[in-house]
Amino acid sequence: MRKVSKAKLLDKVSAKLVKPEWAERVVSPAYDMLRATEREKLMDEDPYVFLHVTSAKSSLPAENRTAANNEALKRLFDAGAYSQTLNSALYLYRLTYEGHRQTAIVGDISIEAFEDGRVIPHERTREFRANDLANHLENIGIHSSPVALAYDNDEAVNALIQEAMESKPILDFCREDNLEQTIWRVPDQIADKLLILFQDKATFIVDGHHRMNASHTVWDRSGRSERFSKILGALFSADELKIRSFHRHVSDLNNLTPKSLTTRIAEMDFHIEPVKDTEGHEPEYAGQFSMFLDGSWYKLSPQRIHPSELDAVILQKRILHPILEVDEEGSDGRLHYLPGTIPLGYLESITQSEGGVAFALHPVSMDQLQAIINRKKTLPPKSTYFEPKVRSGIFIINR
Image (cartoon, rainbow, N blue to C red; front, top):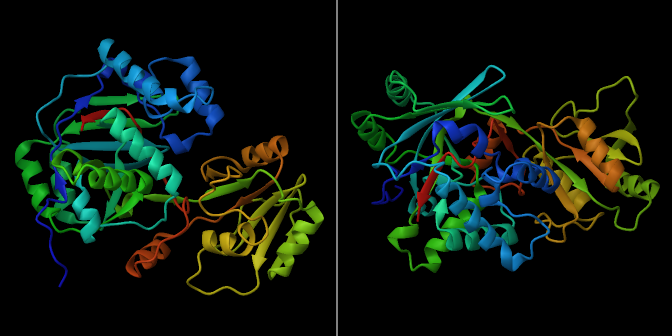
């Protein structure tokens, strides 16, 4: 029998909330939704967008970036963009995009629950990125981007969520990306029931593996202090989630020509077929990849695969690592991840302007993901992209 931790999986959180009149201006997309040039464009356009707190302009020396983040946070507080710290509570966070809705319970998640198996990862992390985030958390001392978790559909939880949403929302706004975001404060009597229902509930990380690992690192560094024992989290019912893929762009061909690259890929037991202009470029099924190389699209189909091998694993083991010499951490800066929400035309234009080769992947299914989790396996970094993604800067929790 699995040992049950004494720590609550979910707890109420004392948070500052962005004020309604500031929400559209301040709340920003998650860091990994944007390429560096896109982040910097948003930052240039507005000194109050929350990306100034979570990111930094590439022109800044590394030693100055933490100071810039802290200055940006102070700028928001001085401008009156946030409430005072509110009494501990749970919140509901509903995201609506193109007719699809998903609702999360937002509160503090125990780092101990990550250790004891109630919070399960499904992706490996890039060490350099997790270390950067750990240093950022220690220096700035806040959580502002919820880690997204999923749990199996639960009718008792659903009923309590519906009851809590009968009250008036405290925030309801929509930025130019057409994502409608709505926040409710959960009444205490409902929140107390939710805390009990989630005490020993198994969950898995949907988005935020690096943030979870970073928070665990900081908790360890602090001697497992109470201060860093929790992380801001958003809990979604798994049946509400939509999974997309992460595409890959490698900025060079590792001293190969386009012809020699395709030859090497064929030697790794792939069937390669050029895509006609009249055909779609998206991979048509799991196990098939689309490749953009030297101005043309190709479909790649491995001839022999193990049923349990998922696409991100196949691509890494058979092409990225042995042929292009790219490790899954992307620590040499040659590997770039792009969310599956972007049009393939954008992936094509990046590859044409920056060089290299791009691979489009078919999304992982929820059944495939559940099988990975049940087997306690993990996928390469950036194997899944859940949408719509939670945004940064609605909540600020002092640590």
